[in-house]
Amino acid sequence: MAEHPNVAVVRHAYESFTKGDLEGALADLADDCVFHFGGEGPNSGDHKGRDAITAALVHNFELTAGTQALDIKGIYADDEHAAVVMRETATRPDGASIAVDEVHILRLRDGKVLDLWDLPEDPQAHDDFFDGK
Image (cartoon, rainbow, N blue to C red; front, side):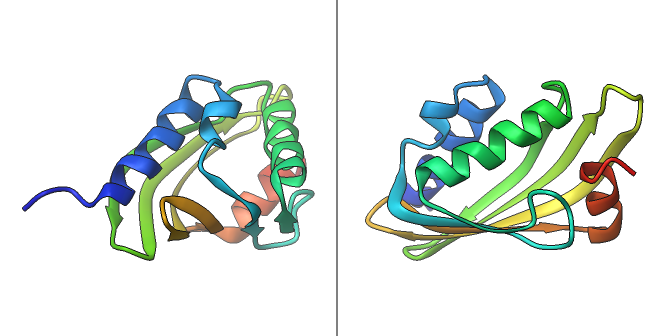
């Protein structure tokens, strides 16, 4: 069975992110895309549009001194959705670290990302880490 084309769209975004290429990572966002970050951390909430999404990702980069890494375990997609199974790791400048399994659910249309939901295995640990606790 052939790989769904949306798998390639999503894989490209995450590979670009891993290389530090934010422009490439966000290349396939719809103009009104929304990233939904749950919890109570500093980046929690909805980030709508490329500028807001970029600001949220840059904020995470700054909080982790560039150590945030997403180890992709699998990407699954159909015509409208994709699921990205991963392990997120990061270390803050104060030495605190996180290693948590996570899933990103994306909604797509015509090869463009409309929404992304960030779903960490342990939302409290995720909040605490990104909140500086």
